[in-house]
Length: 110
Image 1 (cartoon, helix red, strand yellow):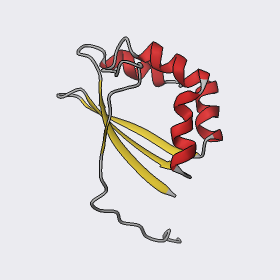
Image 2: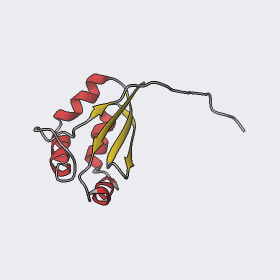
Image 3: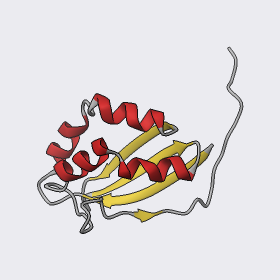
């Protein structure tokens, strides 16, 4: 399992709209993520800076990178470009984070 983390930004005043657009996420986008080996995906908002911290657990980089070329991802990016900082291709501007610490432990049994 590969753990990925990255930071994106939303435009001022779009915090509530960003959350609304993810609850619920489009079923076809969720299916695409699962089909491309995404096991877990969480996004957290830093309210003062409007930074989004994203964390995903994926099977491999090739599958992860292929998501961007799907029709549903392209439509999602276009829709989200209204409220996010984006690149010219409408992908979210993102900065990858490097892992500096991880703790894992076996599940505790009652």
